[in-house]
Image (cartoon, rainbow, N blue to C red):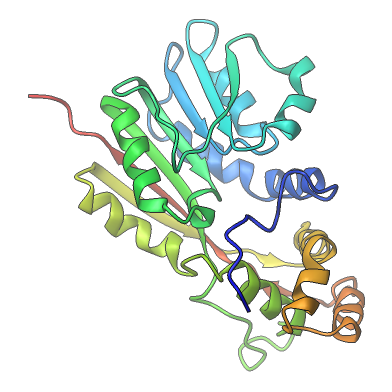
Length: 268
């Protein structure tokens, strides 16, 4: 199967807005806590890369107040722009490719990206570009999945379901990714010379009560035809799994969301 470098979960698809809403419900609480741990304060200038639905960017804009600002970038800003009417005036949204487009150097007190770098083929260049954009003493927070370190195991928990469709989605989305990328971030921050590094991983048990099942359904709806075309799954298996994830006893471990924080050294 030829490798397609395009991001398969495109913002242009009708399911994209629903997926971003679900991700916001699942992960915004942790993201806000981790961002606050940097000392985030009024007057800060912040960079939000791959803003998606804009929930984190809007929250940041509220936290830094009118004396601060947030630059929110995405390769496709159509979903963020739908919320333009509720966007605070200190939030600027621009189309930008973090893998290729420049950022102003030494400009931001805080840079953040969630579930972005894992999808960028030139992720090392992108990460370096974000570090360069920080002011000396500025903070970098990157949150990304490790989708490979922990897989369902019914021997440990009989309610965990090793769904054929979940495995097909994982294989399809990690064709151009590093499935362990979130776990590697701690080491990447060290290699880039960042200081005061901390890292934590958060694992959820996806079920129909917390939105995990809904996220799986949206992903299957969006790329199910691609999974079949790639020979990873059959329509019969997809139909069976879509029915399974709606059952009350269904559960499956989520990917591990790693939140990694580091600080750019101050100039001597």
